[in-house]
Length: 79
Image 1 (spheres, rainbow, N blue to C red):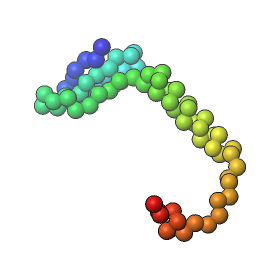
Image 2 (tube, rainbow, N blue to C red):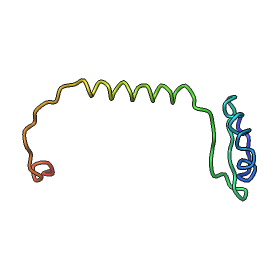
Image 3 (cartoon, helix red, strand yellow):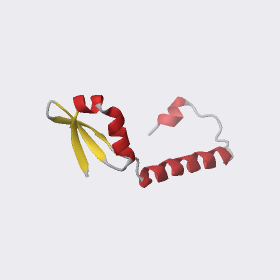
């Protein structure tokens, strides 16, 4: 469950806020009564996305380059 906290309080209690996030709680930051930010723990899905991105980049680095020859600007943009 997310807790709402004002920007002023979040600023004053930032270390406590981070501790709470580490414990799995999310927070909505408000400024003048309007929600402006969300602070939440990184979940497993985001870690999976990061690992997938790393795996893709590693695979692309291992792949050989296919020679495509030289193209002119007109060839690239002809419809």
